Each structure stands twice: as C-alpha cells, then as structure tokens.
Image 1: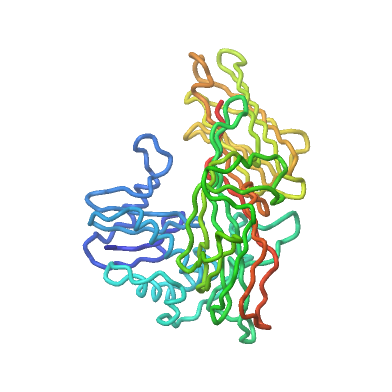
Image 2: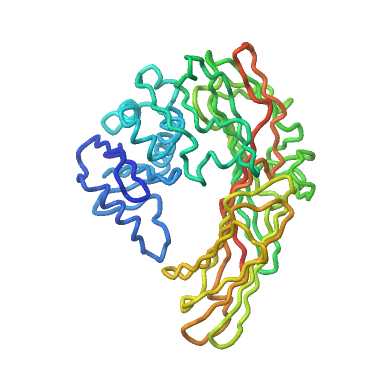
Length: 451
C-alpha cells in the first residue's frame, strides 16, 4: 500500500510528486533527500534502498541519476516495492523514450496520467505498457537524445567515432515518425553485470554473472516471434567449466546456474533446440534472466602494489590490463581505492602520453579516484600515486588501504558467450524492420581487487 510516490533529481529537486493516501507528512521528500545525502550510519557511503524515519518507511531506487521513491507507514515487502519502482521507471521510459529530468518536466501531464493508472489510492493496478495504452491518451513530447549526458544510455554503444546502429532506448513506444509513419522495429540486448574479486596476487577468488536478455518491441499487431539461443546451452551446475581464454566468439558450451523467463515466453521447444517463442508486449521487458557462477574470463586484470617510502610517505601503483580483443572498446571506467584515514596529500603520475584520464583525491572520505574515458582491448594503463601522511605508519599499510574497486561498461562484449542465433517473426510484414544483430553489454556489478 503506497502512501506517496515522488521522483527527485540529483540536486534534490522534486520533479514528480503524488500523494495517494495523505497519511505521511508533506515534507517527506525533503526529509528523504537530507537523510540520503548525509547518510553516516555505520560509516556507509550510500543510504540503503530501504530505511525508516519517524515511523515512515522510505523505499528508493536510482535510475539514470534520478531517485524514484515510495513512502508508506505499513509493513510491506521491500522487494515488492523496489520492483514496483523499477517497473514504474520502465513504463515512463517506454512512453517518453528518454528517461531524464528534462523529459519528465516536459511530459509531466503524461507522467501524472500514467501514475494515476498504475496506482489507485496506494494500490497497484498494472505496470504493463501494453495495457496502459487503453487508458492513457496524452502524446509524449520527444526529447532529443543528443541532449543526454555524456555518460547516459545513448553513449553505451559508441565505438570510437562510430555509433552502433539502433537507438531503441531513446524512442517512445507510442510516438510515430515524422509524417505519421509507425516505427516497426524490435531490439534485443544481452546485458551482463559481473562481480569479480581478485586476490592481492591477481588470482580470481570469486566470479559471478547476472545476465538479462532485454527486448524492446515496436511491432504492431503483437506477432509471435522465435528467439534461438546458443545450441550448447546447459542449465545446472552439472556441466563442465566454461573457463576459456578464447574470447567471446560464442564457441563452446554456456552453462547457466539458473534462469527464469518472462510470463509471455513459451518453452515448448526450449529443451529440444534452445528456442524461445513469445508474443512480445509493447515496450521494454526482460525475456530471460540468468546467473552464472562458473569460472569465466574477466574483461580486466587489476594489479596493485603499495609500499612504504618513509615514515610519512608511501607509493601506490595501479595497473589495469584489458583482456578483450582490440576491436572492442570499454567506456566510462572509474577506479577507486580507499586510502589510510591519516592521508593528507596525494600526488599523481600518469603514464607518458595518457589521454582522456583524470585523477582526484577525495579528502572527505580519503579515496583515490582514477577515471579513464575509454580503454581499447589488449591495452595496459598504469597510475602511480605518492601518499603523504599526517602521522607515522603503524603496522601494515595494506590493512588500512583498499580494496580497489572498478566500474566500467564494455559494449559488444559478453563474457558468458551466450549468443542469440536468430530472431524470427512468424507473420512477416513489409513494414517490419528488425535489425539482424544483437547488442551485447558488459557492466561491473562488483569488481574488486584486494591489496
């Protein structure tokens, strides 16, 4: 039972606010943002997705920099509310095409109309884009995708100076092309978020892949489609290891620990030929979620060395090597390393000829930050940092520094090697224009190297 729903910008501005039940104070948005911004309980850097303040439960998720928040006084399943917030964000994105502060402000009438149909007096009615089409009649004001932030979704498929074909993430499912033409397209993305922990010597301690086959359909008439996956696909831990340094060529077995499918998917022939048949609903939805804990080749190797250089000094060397082919480029790489709490000054030394790299020392939380605009496969990059302390070292410095964490996005690469062989539409139309390739994205969920 939702009491309030609101969307805040990164600055705390209230973009959307809807009070469904009137049992939570009006200043809840300000209370929430102040609590999140200055969160310090148990020395956490970020507020948890669920917390309680003065008897009010706050649930929030962050989507492309926006905070989607729900409040309530009743004791409700947190996973249910968090999933609802994610689905509301997805529905709004389906209708607006671009999910950003600018698009929400320009389409506030449409957004409020959607919210009134999704939630009624705090109770969820539907989060289906297709069902909502019967009740929502406002047309979206399309926001130019070129105005997205540099690190926004439109930049994920930039390889050098070329943009990958297909920009489904910036299109509305209800808006027509100029001239009244209907956009008849379907897009498939395989998005994998990986978690890897390296030992101090560079060996892999833990590794896991959380993957999703994401689909966005603009096909009128909801035709049945068939999606064929890798033939050598095994579900269960009884299969052999997939640890192979041959890259993401798609050869060899793919072993999933477990998986689940969207409600529209039929599995009649899945066990025979690994083919999924479904009638895709309008908008974006996950066709299949899967998890892999078998060994796989990580896209990056991280090596860290920290040595004392005197009573009040130390030196840190960070080295990153890209383990994927040179035809692939990783974007938006950020490396962070906590430093000893008595660190007062850090001087950086980048490799000669370094381009698109920035360094910073966050004094507030004693953290080293190294940002790289892009990394080409097979390349290696090194950073040296000289630390100055306010007091003499006591004990082992490696116990007070680290671990090193890393975030990144690698378009057109998937370490699991799960492939979509083909997408087939049962009743073809001359207006259908499906792309004959699938987009692959690898992102860091938790990428950590111990010191």
